[in-house]
Length: 153
Image (tube, rainbow, N blue to C red; front, side, top):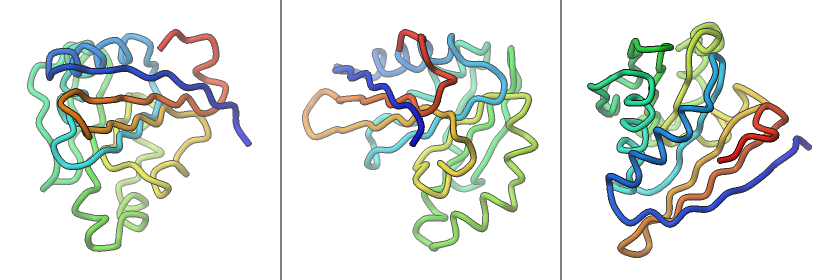
């Protein structure tokens, strides 16, 4: 079982969600994997926009209908949204078709709706869950594996 550490944040608004994305991205290195989970409208794409901002990318939109986009900045941001694939029951097969292992080497990969199918891409990853059960969001960041040891999230 890999090492796991947790951090939890109360996020009051969209600006704070984007700021958390920026903060996390400042610790990112090429090859890193971030899995985002939470209900529709929880703020996953806003988080990724914050990640993009930290990487010098200003136009990050959800790739829901195109499944994945590569944005170029300080390092590439590979932004994947598997929501529609989960509905179709084909997420694992499609992730294999995307050849993310090759693309991930040089960039930061962020997968929205990244469940077990996505977790198999790396033993070292951040798993971020956003709960929107109240007006604010509760964000739990779980660092899996040794890559994130010692990183203040």
